[in-house]
Amino acid sequence: MSPQYAPYSGTRRKLVLAFDVGTTYSGISYSILDPGQVPEIKGVIRFPGHEQIRGESKIPTVIYYDKSGNVRAIGAEAMREGIAETALDEGWTKAEWFKLHIRPKRAGSDRITSSIPPLPSGKTVVRVLADFLRYFRECAMVYIKGAHPNGEDLWRSISSDIEYVISHPNGWEGYQQSQIRSAIVLAGLVPDTVSGNARVTFVTEGEASLHFAIDYGFPAKSMKAGEGVIIVDAGGGTIDISAYRKKEDKVNKFEETTISQCHFFGSVFVSVQARVFLNEYLKDSDFYEDLDHIVKCFDKSTKVRFQNDAQIEYIKFGGTRDNDPSCNISPLYRSDIAKFFEPSVKCVVTSVLNLVKQGHTPIRHIVLVGGFSASEWLVSKVDEALKPFGLSVIRPDSLVNKAVSDGAVSFYLNRFVRVRVAKMAYGTNMAASEDEEFDMSLVRSSKSKESFRDIEVEILCYTGLRHEPRWKDVDAENYRKLCTIRTNLFHLPTTPLTNSDGGRYWDVNFKVVFRFTASELTAQISWMEKGAEKRTPAKIIYEPNDV
Image 1: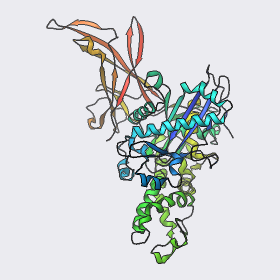
Image 2: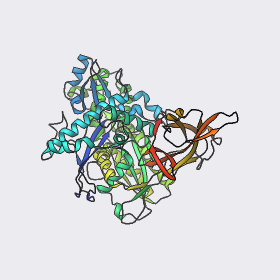
Image 3: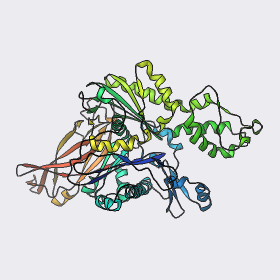
């Protein structure tokens, strides 16, 4: 059943594009908003290289570069038959899993570092992501022009003011968002201006998945106020887990109840486990040199269809001779394959039970979405483990691999979640706060008014366990620099003063105002002028969170 939305209340036509750039597969959803019309969420289902696959909703997150650093193939085109051989012959390099290069370098992510393929020589993650985003916009343009009546005129009317919704894993914060913004600007999607950046909205994969679940099958209206739900978005690279509580009866308004979680136990790490096993399993066989190909075959077939651990299993990667015991290779026991899934299953079960305990909210339903949720084995083992705790696992009937991109558009239209839990406490050396909007009063003094043109304010964050940290000298080792606020105060009213030596200097009084909008922190500068408050946007420069 398709969701129903309220008519669009805007005054002019607008296009909303949601880009879900996943670790292994990526998708695009969109909505054309016409004043007074009920919006529809649609997906881009035709991509170059996928013409023969009707209705395909995602493409591989892969790019090939030639020796000069030029893009030679992206997405489905990079997976066409013969491309791998061409790449080898012509010295192309492949960029894949590149999204993980901007992950927060903490919370257990170090264990996966050796598993992430390196970026092509001379390429930064921002550059690679920009190339992929530019390609995505072109795919959206071609599809919309061809899928709608008068498509050329339609695109011309909406292309200069597109609103972008970019999803990212739960655990990604300001630094990751700043890297994505840099890629968006580099790709030419928006200009690096206040109005340009305002056309980009971030949403966590957990919150996007909640919107998708509400739209497609989760009985949110049957929930009572105060009841909770846990969303598990099991993707290629990460498993994102979020807990929400319904705020009002008969209305889809939710609030986040605990800090959302992001774990690096997505489906690609099942294949990583398989590679480790097969590396040892095949080392004395004639097929050891085919290890890469065999792992790919496991990834495409065995991993997807695996449902039962009671029998033997074959990884089909060649002809009948490939199962011949005389070649020093034998069938895998399904119990071995089950072990490849164990870390991911344990991650989901443990995390869900921890969130249930932390949230102090009655929870009955666990909604499982994302490409990895297509695994019957994963779903059955998670359901089996959680059922004794009175928890029911739900998997929506619609395309769960479109959950994030469709849910991101729904997020733009609906904003079901109104209250979120900050992942850390923010402040300066003086104080910390977790309110939706908070401000800090500051004074800057200088002997030269020109120095007010480039002002920086250092913002700290607290990552320790104290519930309400207030002073930096308490639990001091758990404070770190989060970001720097950069602004121009030259136009603010100043107060001329004289110091004890008779020298002249100026004071400027202002506030730094923070607001949490969806998953993003924004900053403004506030000051009083002629009895009225005035504000202007401030630039946030994030520190790489690599600790």
